[in-house]
Image 1: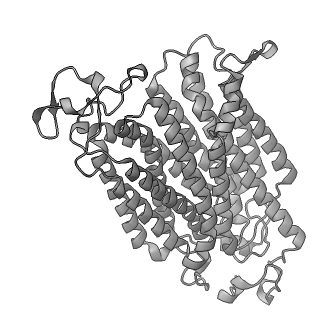
Image 2: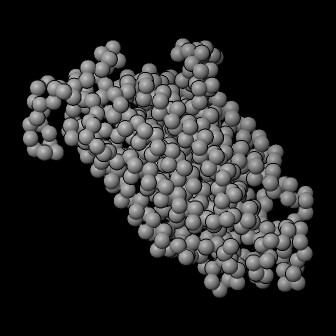
Image 3: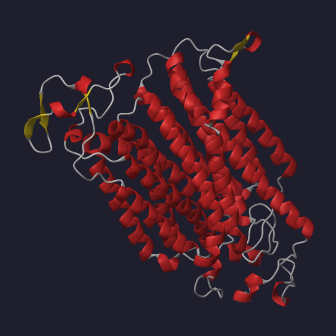
Length: 523
């Protein structure tokens, strides 16, 4: 394929074709451009509705689980939460492979239908006489399986945008997803569901209970049906090359042999693997932070369970708003600094956030008094037995013991993390994470070039799902056994390794058409 240099990227999409490309390039008409962006925007809506349908249920999972199956404990809740990511990890490469050879409508519609069916199953998990918790586990895993369509959405957007449009489109996709996660567990929805009550209304004919636990999934199912209708009505197959010229979809249309050969050109596998590793790390780190926020604040500030859920919900919602703002700002900054520099800067900002989160000073957290059976307690960090009367905190007996449990021996020797520390760290992490998230997707799609990206995007999504499974497991164990000082020190070490890895392959993280020997330089 003839490439006309850096000035070609500045030509309008309706510009003239060169003689060598006349047989294979199709000028994008205004009608085609409008249809292309309508299709892209319907996928923004798909990401938004999918996020709302998932997050709207999260707040009610635990009380619903306790109601339908008293044998379920907190550890089983962890399996239910993780099952979503596990289902998505399995499905993403499969849907991605499907989208490489068939119209993207097919895997999109089927995946959303699976999510709708899974939400309906969730609404009926109270019906079986026993093993209800396992039905809930299957339902959430299937919802996650349906969410594997994220790979299809991002591969479609990557193939339907030029290099200049790519960063903005990927930022809008992530912003739509983040907005759904903000609004889903928001107070407006949750207040409305709470008004329905635990008993709610029963539709005897089909044995359906509509209450504060099932209403969220039924709404999620309804949104899924609306999404399917919109995909059938609006989504069309579109593909443009890196310069924005219209071309045929190599995944299922009969494409020009030269175009297929160009699309199947050698991909820099080192850059692909590195981006997957970096994406895994940033999602691992953020999942870890989300998981540890509630127990950390309860231990450090003696918050009750209710206070921890409320205050951390507000903090995470604020971080979601911050993420949307960051996504919008990235579209401007990327034109000045480039994607690689933003990715590096995002990792550095997250590192600073966790470094600030390290405990310093000589002020210690309050100890849960209820766990004290003797006046003298072993401090395993020093090997001594010390009396800690002065650290005891009675708390509010009506709400249970508060403070740092004495069974976590590090509570006796680790300084507390001040609230200001936690908030500043949260702001920095909330700034760095969305930056790394968008830049990973954007760079990844540019590295892959014109090749159908379904499978590759599936692997990237799967790596992120794996990170969301392993992150909570790692931090739960490390925090309980080692405390925040060692846990966050390990996180800082992981982030430094990520920065080093990024620096080592920095020059290779360039667009497919911008690699040496392909005649186009990275801007």
